[in-house]
Every structure is written in structure tokens, then in C-alpha cells.
Image 1 (cartoon, rainbow, N blue to C red):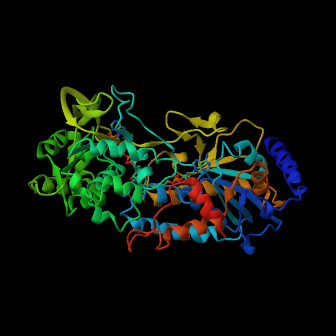
Image 2: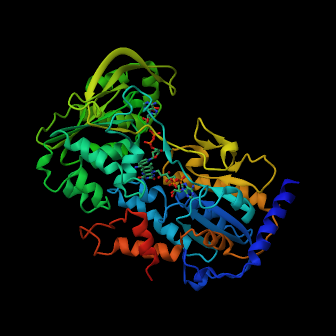
Image 3: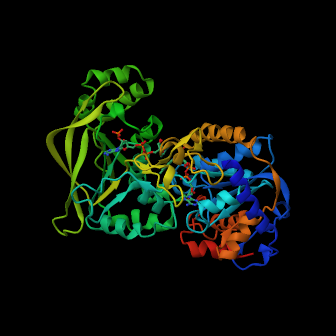
Length: 517
Ligand code: FAD
Ligand code: NAP
């Protein structure tokens, strides 16, 4: 019954689209392709909309595309004018090898039956319900666009407190985060002894610490945006006498969420002191449960060895930056600077001890407090998914994920077609890029099973384009995106020969470049 009703809606919408005669290539609001392989040819295919062009969206498209079970027409909608989600806006600029995955995604977007619709925000420019009517299947892969927060703590409003997501998005050139620059600049210029606290012990926290610690020369050949480089490491870096970056976690080193490769990299930075306290390592190993956790895990044993060795290396003292990896400290309060009551001055943390079973030990406060000076605090305690308009009935607010079974979203409302999910939105904000491969395959397997119930029919591949154009939404197609890519990677824009690209960080500029033929 539900399927019948959905097919009726979809058919009536398609009929409406077919009877419209406007060609999008003549309309002013579309930044469109001239690639003949992607022309408006009617075909018989199952029409699929994928919302989000990050790894999960791209891998979902890749495995749908690779399955020869049914012909598919795949449209990827992306709210930014640029593609690839956190591969562009998350992965650290000094880890260029990780970004090579985007070549795989570029090949995908070259395919005849895969279209890119950048600069289209679902929930704003087009509604989820409209997609459900326009497509046979909709896959939501829009990631996690918010944070777990500590801003509810006393003093959480003070200037100088940012989430790691805000900080990372800014240094990576995300167009929505230009406002972060003045806050970082202000915090770092308020004192020659700069104190930064990064809260959390995941790999994002280590990325933040490393980017803060590295010198301008080390970061110059990366794709760190110049807007960020000039603030983090000004040309005349005599203004920085010393930068102390404390990376604080509420549990011990045995429970750290970071991985050994990333940790080892921090210990080897040539111009940075890496400091760990032996007493904090000892406290972290003092429970029987921690000893069991260590004994049962080779990676954790290696991590323990690495940190124990690091704790025996004295501070060089002559380096400009120091990273202090601190354990068993839980932030309780943010205190204002004595000079300016609107700004952060320090973070008060409670010493903790571990309690609980092996594998699930928690941090319990023991009452003693430590105050760590900080002009800048980066809260790196995890990203969080948010509902976009239309997903509210199936959204688990506490976990920040869409309720789903193997990717099929629990869409029991009965009035439209099935919705699927993949990636961080499906399983929460954890896992590396590669984790999205089995995750996407799981969703695709569910979709392929459900496709038996869908009748492929003649479709007009440009019906979304027409809807957007009628609405005046200026979308960026694949060829237009490639003009952005070419401009960003041109030597005229780069500050350094080895810099992979200088990202454009303003939406209007991106659209202008996308339009230029
Ligand atoms: P995302 O990559 O976030 O993609 C979601 C996409 O949806 C985005 O492009 C977004 O703009 C778009 N979108 C959002 N809302 C809408 C909307 N309403 N309409 C249309 N589009 C929308 N993994 C590694 O393997 N190596 C690393 O070095 C690494 N570094 C990382 C660094 C950071 C700071 C972070 C946070 C993660 C890192 N990861 C790394 C993990 C990896 O990035 C993730 O596993 C992966 O990006 C998750 O993919 P996703 O597609 O679910 O989400
Ligand atoms: P994460 O790995 O989940 O780490 C989150 C950290 O925040 C943990 O240390 C956690 O401590 C802490 N935390 C959570 N809630 C807290 C609270 N209320 N108070 C204090 N601390 C709290 O998240 P992430 O660092 O954002 O990384 C997300 C994913 O991206 C991970 O899978 C990561 O591996 C991946 N990533 C990979 C790379 C890479 O491969 N180089 C780089 C970046 C990111 P507890 O353990 O005590 O909860």
C-alpha cells in the first residue's frame, strides 16, 4: 500500500516534469555541464538521490553504480559548491596522502549515470519530501554538522572557546567558518606566552595540536588555507615567544581514542617538545581493569611503551611549541581572563580516577582541581549529527543519528518512498574514511534487496535540475566543480610550489569561478 501510494506520487511528479519544456542550459541560475555524456537523455533506470558528497555518499554511489543488478540514475546533492565532505574540510592539511581517495570519487563523478548537484542544501533549497517524490530511493549521507559540547559548563560562553569542528573547518577553508579567524587571532595575540587547551583524546584533538605546533615553514607546502596560516603562524613569528598546547583527556592513556600512528607523529615533530607525565601514566595503569585492557590489546601495549619512553625524554626547552599530553583530568569550569572578563583565561579540571569493568571504565572525579591557563580552548569531544527538515520523526536526538536497520531508515509514515542512510549520520561520528566502505556496502545491500519492489521506468535525468532552476537555486554541476578545482590548484593562486591547492573560502567567489567558461 505504502509503495503503491509512493509510486503514484512519484509518477505524477515525473509526469509534471516531462511536460515541462524548458532546457536548463538556457536558464541563468544553473552552472551547468556541457559534457555530452551527461546530457538530458531519457533512460530507464531506478532514480536515486544521495544527499551529501562525503566518503559515505561517494562510496554508496560507487557500490550502487557497480552493481549491475539494475540500471541506476544517481544524483548526488551537496550543500557546498565543493565536493567530498570531510576529505576537504576535515582531513588535516599535512596529511595529503589521505586525500588521494578523492581521485577514486572523481572517477565516479565522471560516470554517465552519476550527476553532481553542488550548492544545493536539502531541507532548504529542496525538501526531503520533494526528493522522495522525485526519486525512487533517497540516501541520506549528510554527516555530522554539530558537536558534542561542554559549553553548558560555567564560563562556556567566554570568547576563545571553540569546538574542534569549528577550528578544523576554519583552517581547512570551509565557507561557513570565516568568523572563527578573528576569535583565534584575538586569543593567540593576547599574550606572548600562548596557552591552548585541546579537550579530548581522539585523532581530531591530535590534528588540532599538531597544526598549532608545527611551524610556518612546515605548513607552507600544505593546503592549509593562507587565511589560517597567517593567523596561526604569522610571517613575523617573533610575536610568538612560546606556544604551550595541553591536550587533556578525562580518562587514562590506556583508554585514549587516538591511534598509535598519529600519536607517534606528535612525538617526532622536529620543532616541538612532546611531554607526558610519568605519574599520570602510572595512575592510568593502577587499576586491575586497565592492566587487563593493556594485556588484551597489542596496539594499547605499544601505545603504553611509546608514551612511557616519551615521559623519560626531558624537555628540549629551545623549541617554540610544547605539546603536553595530559590524562585523568575532566574540565569542570572555564574562568575568565583577569585582564578581560569576556575572554577565556583558564580551564579548571578535576583530577579523576578510573572505575568500572575492563573495557568500560569511566572517569570519576576525586575532588582535587587543577587550573590550566588557556586563551584558546578547542573542545574536541566528538562531532554530532543533526536532523535536517523532514527527518525529525526518525532522528535519534541523543545519539545524533537516523534510526535505521542496515541503512533503511525507519520511515513508517506510510506516505512516500523509502529513505536510507550511510556514514556518520547512520552510525555516529566515528571511523576513518575506509570504515565508510563496509558501511556503504551494508546500505547498498539493503537497497538492492528493496529494488525488487521498484519498477524502473523511463525518466528524465534533469528533473531535479529543472526544479532547482525554477526556484532560482544556482547549482554547481560536475564540470563547474572542475573549474573550481582547476582554479584552486593553479600555480597563480598558490603561495608555495609544493602546496596542492589554495582553497577558495567564500561562496560567491566559488560560484563566480564555477560560472566562468
Ligand atoms: P562527511 O564527510 O561529513 O560528508 C557529509 C557531506 O554532506 C558534506 O559534504 C556536507 O557538506 C554535506 N551536507 C551536509 N548537510 C547537507 C544538506 N542538508 N544537504 C546537502 N548536503 C549536505 N579519516 C581518515 O581515514 N583519515 C583521516 O586523516 C581523517 N581525518 C579526519 C579529520 C577530521 C577533523 C574528521 C572530523 C574526520 C576525519 N576522518 C579521517 C574521518 C572521515 O573524515 C569520516 O569517516 C568521513 O568523512 C565520514 O563521511 P560522511 O560522508 O559520513 O560525512
Ligand atoms: P573520538 O575518536 O570519538 O574521540 C572523542 C574524545 O572525546 C575521546 O577521547 C572521549 O573521551 C572524549 N570525550 C567525549 N565526551 C567527552 C566529555 N563529555 N568530556 C570529556 N571528554 C569527552 O572523536 P574524534 O577525535 O572527533 O574523531 C572522530 C573519528 O574520526 C574517529 O573515528 C577518528 O579516528 C577519525 N579520525 C581519524 C583521523 C586519522 O585517521 N588520522 C584523524 C581525525 C579523525 P572518552 O573516551 O573518555 O569518552
